[in-house]
Amino acid sequence: MTDAVIFVVFPLCLAIAAFSDLFTMTIPNRVSAILLAAFVIVAPLAGLGLAEIAMHLAAGLLVFSVCFAFFALNVMGGGDAKLLTASAVWFGMTFSLVEYLVYVSVFGGVLTLAILALRAHTDAIMASGLRLPDHLLSAKKVPYGVAIGLAAFAAYPSSPLMLAALSG
Image (cartoon, rainbow, N blue to C red; front, side, top):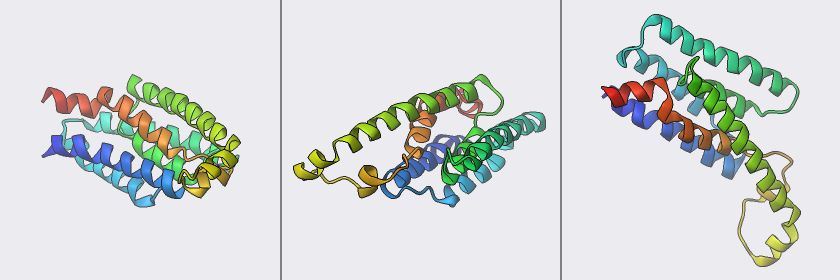
């Protein structure tokens, strides 16, 4: 049962967040809440000790601190900050967290360039009849939850919980 939660909850929550952000430019708060609650429940069942769980929560707190600063500077949206914080807890203070954050940066940069290119050709896209959500062509924001979701899928196999589930 624990392995099933590890294999399903994290990827499902990140996929929901990515699609929601892509189509509505919002990430539901319940996705981040489910991620955090599921970690707290599954971590001891997966064999993580109290010190390891504390380090995972510390990783979330560190990521939250940086995200809060970015949010205060209007560089990052609140939903993105909450999602990144809740997902960082699943990686802990390990190299997999660094890997995850690097992937977020790379995929975020590629996504931003793709959105800017899309917006530069708005007239041609509208004339072609291609149906895209209006906010992708007109909003000043980027659905960064998509990059967070892609990064999570790329880095999750090396996370401590996934490795524990695969070895057990």
